[in-house]
Each structure stands twice: as C-alpha cells, then as structure tokens.
Length: 83
Image 1 (spheres, one colour):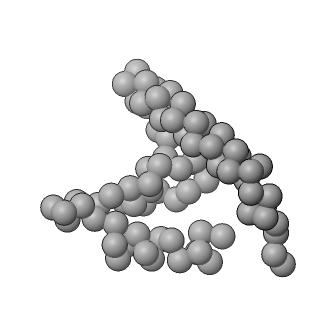
Image 2: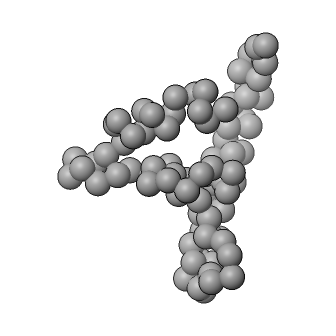
C-alpha cells in the first residue's frame, strides 16, 4: 500500500524544513526505516529515555487514531472500500 500511494516519493521530494532538514512522519513499526519515517524504538538496546519516548509517542498516536475513527464514524462514506 505504501508503494502504491506515492507517499514515500512525495516525502523524498517535498518533506524538508526551511533549513532543508528532513521532516518525518511518525508511524507504527510496519513502516520501513527511512529518513522520512520515524517508528518506535525496539530491540534489546532500548534505553530508559527511548522507552519514555516510545510511551509518549504511543499516547499521541492513539489520540490521532481515535480522531480518525471519529471522522470515519461521522462521515460513513470515508470507510467505503472501492475494489
């Protein structure tokens, strides 16, 4: 789905700050490791600071997912699958 969406290409072309630093989206671990995608820290070498970051970002991500759920429930046509 990521490859079909063109999102990665668009990020590579356009996702930079005014100082040309890469801007990243935060997603779940299913996304590939890439300069424009940030995913939770994982593995055996996670420090307490990394764990704290994962917890903070998880809270924010859940809030965003709840809002997407609200939008889809208010606008049922958004959940209609085509194909």
